[in-house]
Image (cartoon, rainbow, N blue to C red; front, side, top):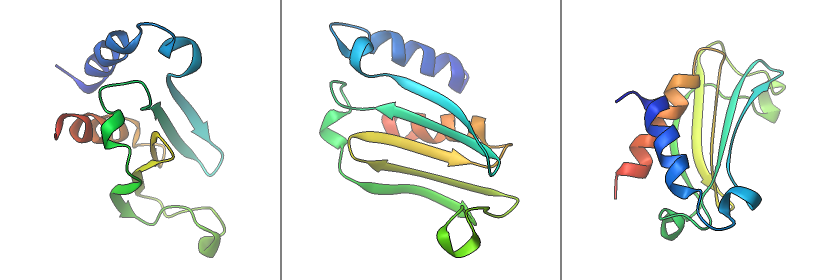
Length: 107
C-alpha cells in the first residue's frame, strides 16, 4: 500500500467522535518553497507518543541563520506540541508522508 492510501485509511480510522471536528491532517505549501504536513495526534492511538522529538532531519531546513530559505534539498519531521509536523522542499511531499507513516508504525 502506498503512503497516501495508508494516510487516507489512518485518517478515516481517527474520524470517530469529535476528533475530525477539532483536529485533523493538513497539507500546505510553503513560500520558501516547499510543503508542510501537520497531523494532530491528540485523541489518536498515537497520543501516548506525543513527546517533543526530532524524527528526521536531512539537508539544510529553513532557519533564521539561512534567512528561512533552506537549501535545495531538505526535510525535517518532528513531534511538537501534540502534533507531527513534517516539512520539506517541493519534491519532499511523499517523503514527509512516508516519514509520518514510519514513525506511526514504529511502536
